[in-house]
Image (cartoon, rainbow, N blue to C red; front, side, top):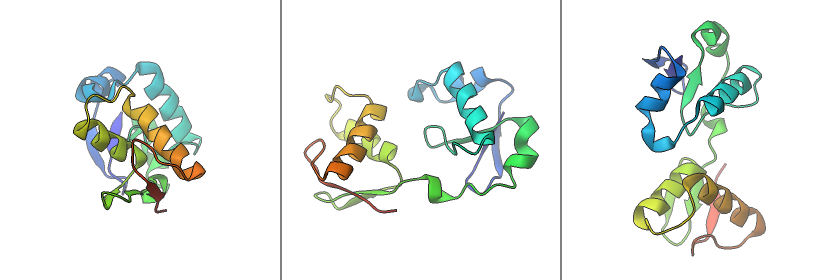
Length: 132
């Protein structure tokens, strides 16, 4: 497996999926989740996995021809704090960092922020705006 940057340059190489899981223990990655993601990438259904770009070594020649620019990241702004985040997940991580007592996990928090934007309501006491 390769981990690439947004310009498709290889930044890390992993011999197994377990290597990815060991490298990012804070993300609670699963073998099945990574395998499903890698299949989605090659079917052009997915671009990132928890903000990381992965592809199989055997698929790299095809993968590097595709555009994986920031169009897959959904930038978000917290209005009250006047803070900008590259993704909903990054915003959720920040909220978890400043308030570790929040019971929701980061993935759930990310979804709640997206839902709040769609419904024009607050999430976690803040107003959110999608930027792209």
